[in-house]
Length: 369
Image (cartoon, rainbow, N blue to C red; front, side, top):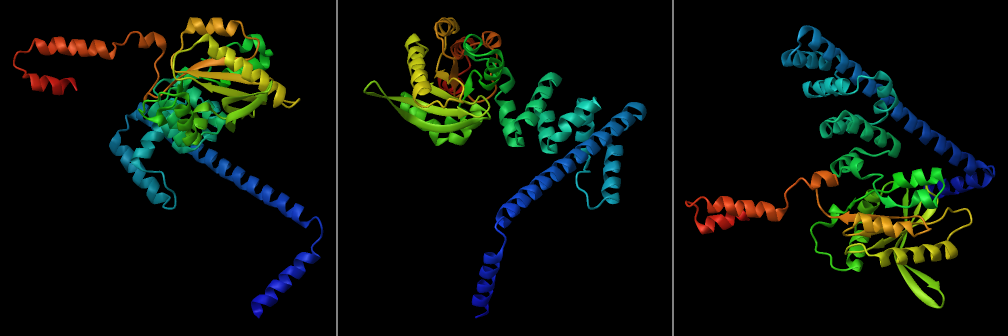
């Protein structure tokens, strides 16, 4: 009975509320949530700045008085004893603070950039990058894109700084200067689909299915701003049906992005097909406030000269990039050419083994494997 009476009283109260109550409640909830986020960000910035000052003090004393590991251990114990409710004063973390301060000597940059990202992300920047310029690039991108620590690690390990802005494109000829610059920074080359593993993909549809099965990782590799619209999107045009592989909408570019997948090497016909799809999407799907659609052709192997000739004749914005499934960092082409191929390594091993008469043939096979 009490439950029924309580429900009745609650319903009566709801009926007697002012008409704008729900709107006010919604606005207050949003305000409280925003304030909580700002408070968390402010607390993080204060903590990172504190760590930077501690690290700077340790670095100064090591330089002036030669503080060693035992002194740092004692400092860690004394700080932990003085502030038992605070974590982060372990000897290992104090050493990270020192490395952090040495990595970022400019206090203005610390306040403006690295103090605005979580401490775990700062540790990843220290652990994964030895080049100061590269470390700075990833720090600024982390703040700009709002990467979490796991996402930052993925971007570093896939050498994003070597791939971003490397797409073969015709944006300068087909887009206004501001839009061209933005589009250039949105795309990359190559795209790394290492989440597909070592599966031998023989058809475009298999590649498409695999990417959709890993849509979150696929979107992560594409970069921020991409919203998935559909796959095998039907285009009815000229009494015929056409299906484009993947369709996205980019929130910053404010346009559709048509993605065509090819498992072989680049052919001129691929670019013509993509241009046709772009024309249909612009005529049938594009809103008057949208910017011209952009095409992205992903091929297994790209000849740079052929790509340049293909793009030169197109009056629609598009780019051509390779897709790979290799794990590990991507090397620039000039460095790749300096490395021996697998076949060359095998030949060298065979020659070396043939010079050692003590090896049995069975052992040689094992070594080659």
